Amino acid sequence: MNTFSKTILHWYSKYKRPLPWRNTRDPYKVWLSEIILQQTRVAQGLPYYQKFIEHYPTVDQLAAAEESDVLKLWQGLGYYSRARNLHFTAKTITTDNNGQFPDSYEELIQLKGIGDYTASAIASICFGEARPVVDGNVYRVLARYFGVDLPINSTKGIRYFKNLAIEVMEASSISEYNQAIMEFGALQCTPQQPDCEHCPLNSGCMALQQTRVATLPVKLKKNKVKIRYFNYLIFIDQLGNTKLNKRIGKGIWQHLYEFPLIETDTLMEETEMYGRVSSREEKIKDIVLWKEDPVVHKLSHQHLITRFWIVELKGEIKGGITLESLPKYPVPVLLAEFLDTFKNSYFWSKSIS
DNA sequence: AAAGCGGGGAT
DNA sequence: ATCCCAGCTTT
Image (cartoon, rainbow, N blue to C red; front, side, top):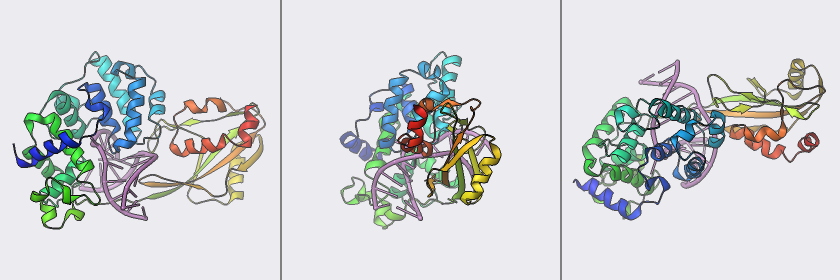
């Protein structure tokens, strides 16, 4: 066994965190944890893992759920395609494979939502298949220890790090080793200001020798943020009912629900917006701008400048829903936060009674 | 090869 | 503000 792997494994035996998906080799639980943890910190994902295991203890029970309920449980975690693909794949496994999980990388990677990383993780952790995981943690540990400055998000970099990972992995303890190197990256070889002084690998670390710890790994950045202007219309009709739409098609928040939306390309004058709202509804009793200052909701690639308009109607909305039923719909965090304050408002109490 | 897709925590 | 998190899919 090479020094690198041996040290990592020894470190792991001493410092690993007790996490619920480490107590098992049940591929359903490992799969669920891996999907939840994609681009997500353990601290953020942990409560979601607990909720899902509670509601859906087996893949068959997840498969039997409504997509809307799965998304509701996922609400707040982001990257909602993960939840849709999770549900889709649960149904595939239940119907096509009698609830039995595939036990090889080659089969796993064909499932929706499972890429190279996740297939490697499940195959190695549950079935002992010698596949290295290469996630953000592993990129960082390898780049620093071996002094590699190829960009980790370039085609050449991805190939290079994958091959390096294969070379140094400990195939005889692949289940432990894969979790160990990720845990090492998360706790010891951290992105910012790692504690190199007490690192068990400091004597052989190229980045430390060359004072390049702070500059490795190298990552090409491209982040362009798009500004969008959202106006949500909270209709309230004679019965106290409102209206929600399901987001369909491309773009953010697919299959989540939202109030009727008017998107503009600038922040409109209030009077201009009153005109726009009036022109699309016949029987308006009153329109009130909820708050003058827009809410700025920041996604990684979009900033949403958002205003909410309370639109009271004289008649009844077609396909309206009660305000009390709102909590059962999966909604973006932007709307969940609005609803929290809206529930304490005059409009809410007036319409509920 | 590049873009799109969330939300939160740390700095 | 910026970076990054147990990445995957689509264009």
